[in-house]
Image (cartoon, rainbow, N blue to C red; front, side, top):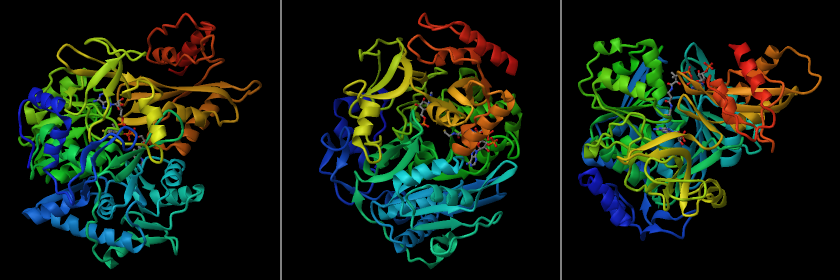
Length: 631
Ligand code: COA
Ligand code: AMP
């Protein structure tokens, strides 16, 4: 049963009056193996857990429930790959059967409830099957984005300790094949933990060498397997771990539970995105990111939509009309993408002329997230598409939007640059640095009053304490989002940027601290800093500043090239680290803190606005000179 539709204000008030009853009502839309004992148990995990004592299987709810309910012949997944020049449609029945066989192949290799499986795959349907097959048998998947280097994959393997890894021979980026298998081999070599098994999908464009005893061909393994039924797991059991950038080189393993996540996603599909079973929904992200987990895989399938999976780019595959072509070909109702993709389209097709070739009559709305959307881009998209453009704000940790516009309630906050109103479940407030709640219009730390709603990460992998320290310690009783912003007079929330060392490059969350750790390893580097400079396409782009050790006489350009190569090798191409400069000394405060905000302002072509505590103002002049020289 779908939640009843009322106005946004009524729904928010309903949630405020009785959060437990609100989520119990939302939970009715799903099949449960056993009803929960307590809708929220405050004594479990880092801040409490939802649907404690309940049993549910997310794969059953995403696939079998729809097959049993008569949707077996409906398309569950449409794979469209301009990269591979290929397309494929899988019905709910076909996806369920393929997933059940893969689950059997995993079980035959000893994978069971609570075991981890790392998935390192490009955007192919087998990646979706892999995630759902884990959910089917109660294993915990951890998907690693393909743009990360072997060293990053190794960190995740070492931390998650998977029994098995599912990967592919290659991914496809414009103009090149990305050979995944050698990277996987290198990562396993680097990791102290060695998975017992690897299943490798051989793609036709590149064959991978398999290691006898450890590796098996994905297709052969599935063909030989017996289908496995869904096993009941606790609603509070982990469904997946998704590693995301923290402030250091060690990524944080964000844990997602089964029950709360399924309830929250199911609710968002109708109330935020306004779609119904049978509608076509397209999230143009990657399964390696949280957006892909929630809205390529779990959300659309939980409600019985057809989900589009796209292996291509917004531009260049083959042109800036690619998104409109996909929307028209499949009758997409809701498209969800990152502002960067729109900026890329706008750069190539400023008048959106290519849109005229396609019938977009079925498209109802465009949702944006992943980074702040600059108002001109949002206004441009709305004007040329003639559809509502809805920004919504969320994080890997929350798994679903914190603020949004609500198609289900007919509420589209018309405030470009803002991220919409708080979703029921979230009491969002702005706090100053000592924890005082600020008034409307005042900027500060965006925080959420505890408890977090269902679906939000209940903990970090292996450590409630780390979770508490990372998110709950600064403001007791609150979850600190790490974003700064304000709530305006209408109640719309604007997100200004991060309060920590995280930057957002092309909608990808990256840690400047992690890049600094890599630069510091260069033998000629004495000191370094990385900041996120404004970028007209990617929103932000990393810029590295280094001070060389005394006596280093080498050509600066050569050192900078080495630094760029080091970050690409250590973190991966996704870091998009292409810019480094040498400065004679680092601008600092008298207490030794690097003036990153002033450096960033200079990189953006603005005055540095140095604080009075600056040690030596001329250090900023040197930075400006180095930046000017580079231009
Ligand atoms: N596997 C391997 N490499 C990958 C990769 C993957 N899955 N995804 C990206 N890369 C590589 C790219 O090829 C690029 O390599 P290069 O330096 O050799 O050119 C590098 O990582 C940086 O990628 P990106 O920052 O995405 O830049 P791009 O020029 O390839 O593409 C856009 C630019 C705008 C088209 C692209 O960033 C985009 O579509 N962004 C939308 C982001 C998004 O969906 N975010 C999800 C959160 S909602
Ligand atoms: P990720 O965990 O990769 O989803 O990144 C989360 C971060 O991206 C948030 O903390 C914000 O800094 C940023 N972000 C996501 N969505 C938005 C949005 N709609 N507006 C502004 N920033 C956003």
